[in-house]
Image 1 (tube, one colour):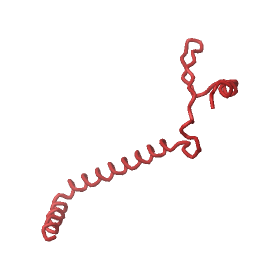
Image 2: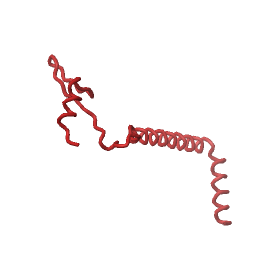
Image 3: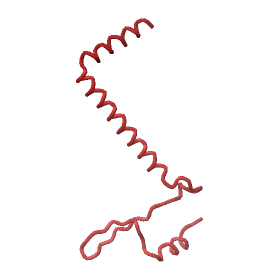
Image 4: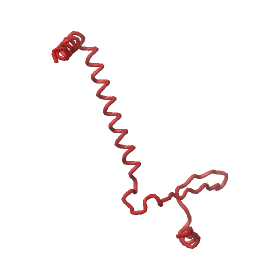
Length: 92
């Protein structure tokens, strides 16, 4: 226990001796931790998207690749009759 207290005392003295360097390091650590927490919260939110549905593993996203007038469009939409056709053709 005495050795740990000695290490903490030496660290505190070095922090006080090198104030600018210590401030930069502590600020960098705080910014890094804040960024990590924000990214972790964002990833957790994205992974939990629509997970409240009972059959969440059976939820799919329809993606359309359309060429219109020489322009390629990548859309997450589909035409109106697609839903009825999908209901008729899928197995239960």
